[in-house]
Amino acid sequence: MNRQNKTIIAIVVVLVLLGSGLGYIHYASNLKGKGVILTIQTGYNSSTPLTRIVSLDPAATATLYALGSYKDLVGGNAYDYYPPNETLPNVTDYPAMDVEQIINLHPQAVISFTNYSAGQISEVLNASIDYIFLSAGSGTSMQIIEKQNTFLGKLTGTEKNATLINNWMNTSLKDLKQNATLKANGKPLRGFYYLSQDSLWTTGNNTFEEQYFQYSDIINIAKNYSSGFYQISASEIANGSPQIIFVNDYVNLDRLNDPPFAGTPAVKDNKIYVTPPNAFDEPDFRDIYMIQWMVDKAYGNVTIPPFPVKVQYSPDPLG
Image (tube, rainbow, N blue to C red; front, side):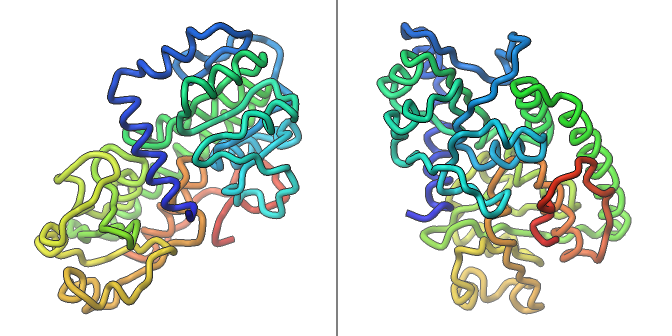
């Protein structure tokens, strides 16, 4: 099971749970135990920062590193790619989290971007471990990402850096949108994101990856057919006639030599671009660099302000 397929399945699980009105999460939060469930909606009401955290969420791991609270992580996961050279113990998190592993690390909290069985959540809560649930699927936006930055900053006492990162995101998004619109000159390209070769998975409306298209001034041909991450039909791709295609690095490019892609303007004009490895699928602050990359490929070079927090490893996947 590769990371990309895991992400798709996790997103589907989240959509099912969220579509039921968060009842699943609400049920878990009412189970007896010393731990509590925390989200950006509940906030963190303690004045004492957390100092022992297990992250099952690659986006959270990256954000905590940028905030300056990587030292507070006592466990990570096999899908962490930023920062590189991670030495944290990897906790099994798919298809189920290894609660025994988590408990043995003695964390105060575990962060997840998907949900698990009520029994597993109960074990975590009853072990006096808080369960922190972050967004990953439909409904996640740049604004939600900024709220998660603030939330994680509050959890770890790094609110000042969270504010710096959020300000940088807002300035960068404004600059990128303005420059992309100027370069498009009223003729935005039609684009498509080829997410998985197992089937024609892509991003529809109301996702953080759809916002990549919005801020890049590229028309996502899939956004009018469905919301969230879904399987588009071959005829919808052909009818959309994409002029530029972004291909997940897991996808075999030979697939583009066959219908429905072979006859598209993107293939004819060789405007096919493979996404930077392990960088296009996480809802975190590094999405700014992915938007910049898309604008570069579609319309030409654009710049953004330097990252405002000093870190050892560049947050730019292409840097």
